[in-house]
Image (cartoon, rainbow, N blue to C red):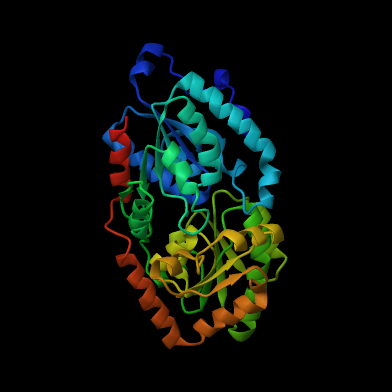
Length: 398
């Protein structure tokens, strides 16, 4: 919560005011676990270029470890769908006031926004623009999928943008807004030091048993909606594949005790591994994955998946009116075809998830074909070094 937003109580201001005037200050805002990850790598690359930079903002554990002094946790502003926004109104109001106050007192030289457009554009960017602070947007909102009119807002507020998907360059060019394509940062981060058998030994799993990953999302609302269906699917799968084992990589934004309690009630033995998504995926023959960055991470690890997602009924109605993409999973969007089945809303039920999963697990030829198609995705995401290229753009703006 924004309880630390009293400027007088923070330790971000330096004991030597004269020295702080010559040091460049950067405010960086990420609202989700994926943004926290990408923000952490961006910060490290910027510090490699200019070690004297000071960073503060909104993010998670990874950004904090990279050197960002957090004004608030991204967990306080992360929402899913339209109706979920209302439960966070109090946090938004407090954080909005805190951001303005902090900008007035700290006078950042640059504001970096990472995805999360509703909050970043409507609250952070507007406040920064009024104070003539330069704005760098790293990782474009998916305006090509929905709310294309938001491009006008981006053109008005953002000074420079770095995009990570190749087709985004042509999209923005068609709207008269030049952007910088830096490649996808996951090309650098999605990797493991384990073989499949080694990863299974590491987590205490049997080496020769079918292993399925459960990735219910990084937000509490996602987990509440999707983990029960994943667990039900696991119960059905275990009847068809006795000895199947399950592992869940816990996002830093989630409470381990809550997830453990949900799993314990199911009777299914699920290994919970906090913050080790790539090592977990190295174990897996297949994963049940909540739509989002995790689908691309899973794909880059070469693991077949079933993509699932649920929002409230009202959010679904709004989405159906404004979303223009045929697919929601990043692997399918990048491929331009269906590689991973997508089960949305009522279709994201235990029986349907289990049915799609078994169709892959019990058909080795189909499984190998999916893996081959996933391997093609990597080649479409540019060269490694995306965070470094984005960091140079940001540093050049200071």
